Image 1 (cartoon, one colour):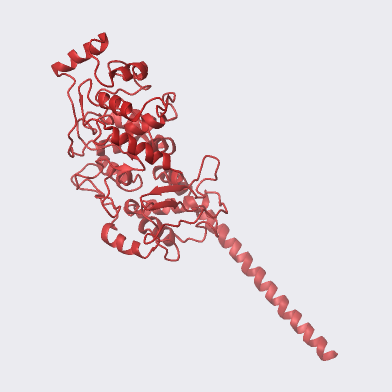
Image 2: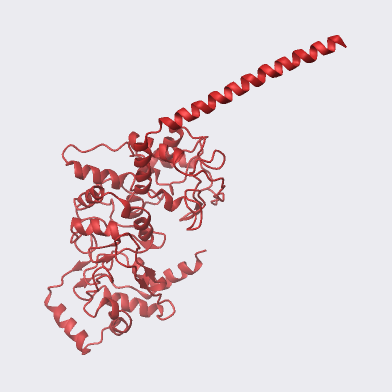
Length: 442
């Protein structure tokens, strides 16, 4: 019995020493964690929060207005199927809580998650690869210290074969992504370089506004290519041409027009629509004035791409046609529908109402290469952006039940070829095709 007692006492001693050691280690870890927390630079937190706004991270990584921010789960439509966004809160199990700065940088700039899983390029890392080291560090500090951790596992992305084979993304990346940090151009001023950096990297404007190739790759990532930011078909919208084309682009916009559009959703006599509403409400309205001005300065430097449309408001025939419309002497196809349903807001003259109803005469969206966005707006209606200090939001009703496909084609063809506008007519087939596609959307 005495031997047994000695063994028990010895065992207790080991337990006590183990407990003391464990407590000591835990205390050290806690103190270390507190020390790390104390070392966080408030300037990095503030800057990281701003950069997350610039990158519009919340838009794709939040599944809805009532859902926790950055917890993922938003279904993103792609030509290959639905891709669900990931949880990027600092939750250690379902989010990025156990990511080091290196892990975070590799995911954001290289498209490779911790553990080596490749991300689908619905995550615009081909643009984010240009982000500077300082900005990546600030973003990391913000997400790890200021974003609330949310334990939420988004739905799993299940694309059909062969797109479900993530190894293939290695070859896609090697073929199409240029892993280079942004480098200022010495022959350009500081404002131009700042605008170029924001547009090409965190702003990832090219992800929506640049045409894509057969492999869904962006055809260009910088202004060195004339295709860059020339407009593209994205999720059944045709995004705006941001180059210097005089009719369908920003050729007739001033830098002030562009800045106003990014801050309020109204500028250049155009109102934002579609996914750009989310971009403005979640992101660009919060940009610093210097950054908005830099983006406008950069975009205005882009030369024209190639367009077939034109805007000639001073042509002699314009005044004659307008007089006939006002008096009702000439009834062009689509004119009656326009006067009955559209003229109340957009005026018979197509001049609209500043900061309320967009002008249709010379509107660069009206004169876009493809009328997809115009067709969708008539079918679904829309609402202008709600911003701080911006105009009161206005709604446009849906005409899907009021107009037939041929009537929509007629009225849009009328709009695209009146008041000096000259663009390709809209066909009934284009309207029917988009109507069927939108009806199939989940």
